[in-house]
Image (cartoon, rainbow, N blue to C red; front, side, top):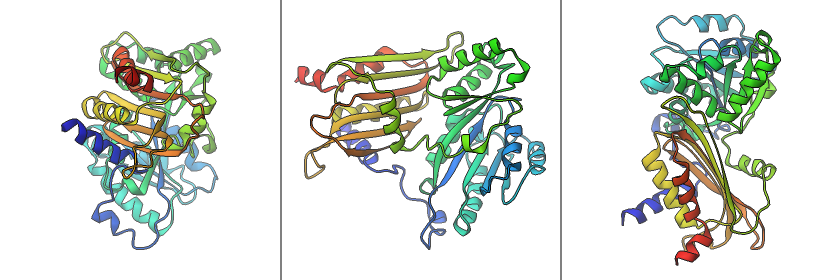
Length: 388
């Protein structure tokens, strides 16, 4: 049946650490010798004038010893930001300009061309990281998808999304009557792993507190860092491993809750006042989820809501399928997606009496919290046992 085929397809994707296939012939030509580790990719975003290029200037001028490459995405044929950044380059850093339009709108042609050249450099002498500075009008999700769905996805890893916030103007941007502008700012905030609250010297402490309250309402999981003139040390910006499945485990333990068996609760955060509301919705259940039901649900979400479901993460105790197709053992499953790109893996075996809760997080536009909660609860073993 179509449902069985979908479940099988998603399961095959989720039990592999890299769910997106091998690199293309063009990239495989680079791998004649033992390849270096996947190069970390940092997405640097933020609305117009927030201070992204100033931050890059500081990073490239700092004597940190890291070999970095920078991709700057600009409109037009003249790269003004690139010229400004060149003045600050220290050591072996390299700057590339993608100026055929916004990467998130025009596709990945420029990005593929630049990444091919950068990966050739990486195989000759390993890069410590690649920083992609987006345009101020860019939505991060298509850029993340461009990397995760590329022919070279095996050769890179997303390290994290850093969003620079203009503390003086972000409130007006969030409340703008221009839905396009407001939607862009909301997505830049919602998908961030770190939020740099910049220009704090230009506003009062009370205003900064109010801004941070707005930011936490949109993205409660991101770390907030206050700064002036975009001065933040490289150690706080790189090496985040925010998209690593293994990193979900320590984070989950730090957020663990104790509840009776079968109990579940949810949290949701959203910003009202425009037609393209970004929401963060999370659910937790003190018990295991049914593996087959979970895979079918996750596969359906990715297939039908990939355009509006910007990011999804889950840490789930479950039981692998029985032999010969699986081990039949109780395991801890981690998975995540960016739009329609999904990856997942079992992190470790679980003892039969080990207590660990099932946790899922959704970030997207106009999410139906009640429908998601009902579908989540339908995957719990208690609910399925009652139905059976």
